[in-house]
Image (cartoon, rainbow, N blue to C red; front, side, top):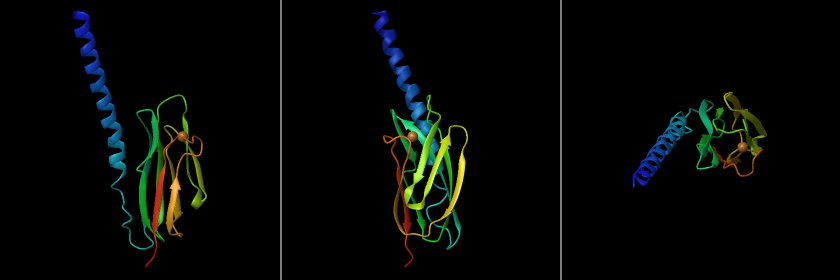
Length: 141
Ligand SMILES: [Cu+2]
């Protein structure tokens, strides 16, 4: 009886801890978002922080969509916060000839001019299972 109760308590405690962990991880993504929504003036710099995270055993680059205007200078701060033995994850946007390897604890900043309109996938070139996203470059009217 007592053992069963203890086990229930343990499960509740673990679930609680997991929820706190998930909240903290989502917090990272939430703070990454508002820096820019492609709202820079023409020729301006738009800044994004992209974070590689682990959620329920799946790795993601978040946010999974970033939008800029053609001609914008784009500054990406790339952070790898995936726990585990593997301390490196990749970040590539093949459409813009970008390919970086990001080490956990060592954020990297890259800058490029979004001179081509379209939808450009980004992902981790090192691990095919790693979920990526897309850079959307809105064309000039
Ligand atoms: Cu990876």
